[in-house]
Image 1 (tube, rainbow, N blue to C red):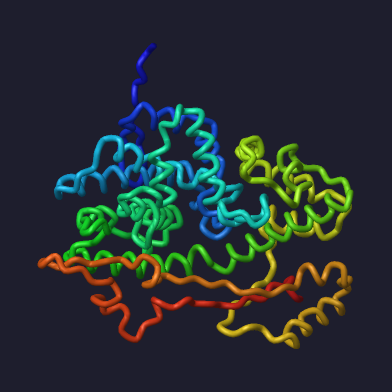
Image 2 (cartoon, one colour):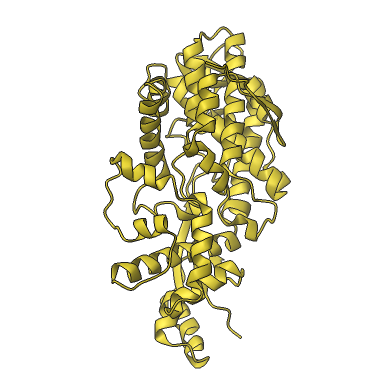
Length: 405
């Protein structure tokens, strides 16, 4: 059998990324992973930040590159990591987003109702494990936090994991939001393991503080930017409207695979055949279908689709307190006077809430180790938490409505 010539990839963030395992090369070449080229990393954020057109494919490779760096740092510091464990760590992070649907978080739980992408990721990893003669078993253990060495799970998923280290730096680069740029190399050079827990040496404290502040900035100014939020809410409502029409036996044009999922409310996610069908979905299905829906007979669906395609979005207001019903009613009354029918007003005037917790000390806190090998939680050694709300969940409220002339 002819041996693989393992490639070196050129990444705009880190430079050259090496593929050092035939198994990893084969996983990257698999259609499940290649599909990530057609899944936008930042949903509809390119409507605000034109450069934000990078994919989950790039992010997964970047995260794997950082995992390779992390493994090297820990080995240099005397932490024993076998070759099998090293490969499994890289596979776990490489495949961590393989369950994302079209436009990533913009359509979280919209295609398969109520099912998070991480649940789909573990299901797809199990299918791949069968296809690759159980060579992914250890990676699945690490990913699902059932492996005995807990620090390995923390490298994949925690409040300071290589996933976050890559997406903050990568998304900052592509959006031009330089405040989100972090020094991932510096942070990784400071990691260590004490009592099976991932820690950061105290010389890396300022870099961790920068990481936390950058994450806060990226969430409120980029990921939850009001225009991105506006577009993604419209996309959710569009799919919800289409699902309702289709399940009421109203014929709508869709791509075959999107139509398959819109016809079904209850889906058995343990069914490998269904998961395999899910991997045929990508951003192209959504865009192609929106282009057809803008000419369908349902007036609401027509408006939704055209607004997304043409970036003719709704007006959105963000506030620290919930909007009162009388405020919403005034918006509806103005639309009635403009000639809008009730059938159009109700779908187009809506409110809700968004929240985010930048740092959760009770959930796997970041741990800082001093020169005496004493370990304390990040919030107990950093000045960021003096009179600040970084530990609490921040909630904001939105109101969307058509632009009023």
